[in-house]
Length: 157
Image 1 (tube, one colour):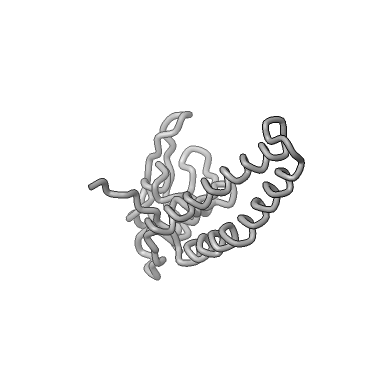
Image 2: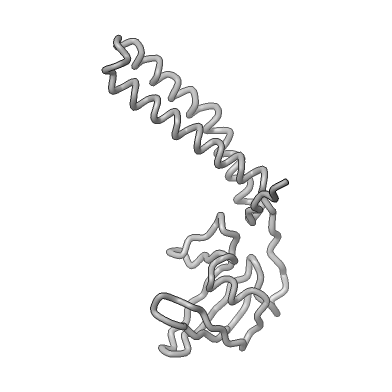
């Protein structure tokens, strides 16, 4: 038996996925079914671009529904720790670039919630992995395309 991948996420993200699934299976599925019905009314299906587009949209919808079901079925709900002595999922970590002195604060999240543009990094990313279980004052090194980057943990919230 193959072990399914587990997707770490917060309770909030889990709830968002459940709500999105309900929306896709009710509202969106009816909309797409209506598009197909209207396209069929245009006649010959062999040269009916509206029908082809609606069927393509239906395929995308069913694919998205399957993806979300898989995420929900294999979700691992992670509760942020109140501890600030070690970095974990839910921690806000301020790091200083050793070479340039720049400081940035990142939130460590599960892979389903990562958004680097918002400074939300996955615990599965190279940077996230290097931070997990580290303490304030620790130095870390991260392999990057530009070479090895060195950071110091300034603060953990």
